[in-house]
Image (cartoon, rainbow, N blue to C red; front, side, top):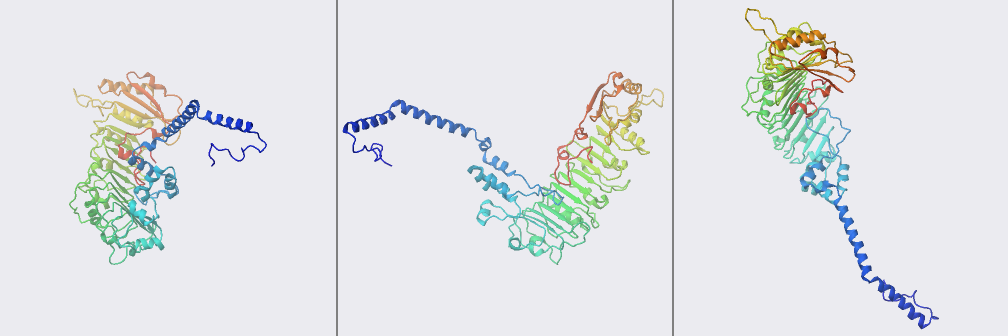
Length: 551
């Protein structure tokens, strides 16, 4: 670049230019350059530079505020990347098994250098990518282990990985339609934290484990916390310990003593699910074990209750464990057995056509049986009715003894304060709850449910658009007046309906001293019993959120 003070060749005057013209040209150029160094010009340039700096600072301030979070919080947030939508949950596990896509990680890393460094250092994120093997240097730096999802005999790179000793794999999910090749599961697996094995399909009769030595991973799985076994003819002889989630599905001839030993060695177990599994005879003894205080959810599905007496009567079970009995064949009435601890402190009870839902302050007991009404004797033998304050009587159709059973239940609930019924049952309830005349002279009248203050009546059929017929105005007035005269008034009447109900029922205005409400619900799911957190929240495939109106 030529010096600004020199005259370029193009600016050189022609040979015909006089010295006077040359002097004038040089003078004009010097004047132009002098103007550039005037204070006003420099101040203007300084102002432009300052404005540029301010704009840049403003842009920095308008960065996404997520980058101002602590690295630990931001790292956890970025780990919640979208999961695969093409893998529907099929009950193979009781924990989240949907993997992360590598492309999602790449997109996050490309946002900025700050995010790239966080993603590269996120062990949990890379551990969520299945069938992905990062380079040895990166895997060591992140302390990640491959996550293998297999549906056939492993080949190539995956066969090599499973043949290493020790086995450096974090999770194995193996669906295999024949006897499992145990040569791939023999080496110790010190970093294995999740194991799912399924052999065959429902109705198949394969023996999952064959051979004399059927112990998996040489019995060395110190990090294993989540275990799911399907279609087992016999459990592996491993002494699994410190499990937090255990699923046993569609298996046969399982020895209770072996499963009890796993429970005894897993005091921090949180979920236990048993599905369509039969057991050998129990010897009647329980191993010594601490109370399972961390066990939040127990699911028994498609089983016979009599085959699980060894579990129901387990002293280590606590009232803090919520129990779901899904399509379970209950013990016959009159059979002596230890009731579920979850049924000890029941304060809310819902009876439906297909089962019951009994709730305590922090846990509950749910029983559902397809195509059958609940056995009232079974309900009364598994829970205590004396402390129930809220009853939902939602039987879908009547049986000959329904009225008598309703009377028995209400008579056994002296603490009841809220009653929820279908509109068609209101005449029957009015008759039961009306004060009865004394049978002896000078005796006081008997008032069922003396603490009942709230009556909620569902006037819309939950099944089809139909309004239940309510009693006449005079009948309702007489019923409420009789409760007032006995000193045990019902103060609050609530009619529950769906939106197609255009007008409130007629007889309500004539009842004095009763607070009346008419509530419309978009759907019945918005009209729900108060549920403990463990019951209200979905946990996994076998533990959907509980609901009075759930299908």
